[in-house]
Length: 196
Image (cartoon, rainbow, N blue to C red):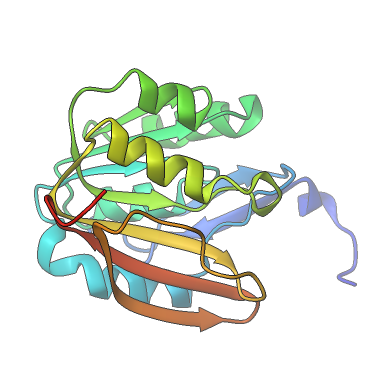
């Protein structure tokens, strides 16, 4: 057990690439909030780099903002971050202001409510919900039903290593899959017309 100190109420993450490389940002202690670690983020953004420039990205369970802010730092044209927890949302607001992140939009609310109101499709989607919520399949269905993925879109999924891969649409094709510790992480490609 780590010894207690005054920083236990919050944590810090570091942006690892792009225009904000090296910037440290705080995030609150919220149940289920697990910022994607540096090593995993480095791998994922190496996978995404060829298609990230000017892309429209969605970070559905933003939490600390680790994935969405990394995408913005590395050249995404627009990044939409969605967070339901009030304290995480407020700290994300502060961090976006501090970074002058004009390419980012932040929404407070539940991921499924956000998707139900959307009409414009995305090029990259990050799905890393709190594990206890078990929302992977529901979110995948909503993205498909509402046609919120552009053809060729990439979808990043993170889930517990001991869990089976969630049920996903047949139009999502697995490109890469790795694990780090207790986490499995995957990258899918959406192919329009390849099933529902």
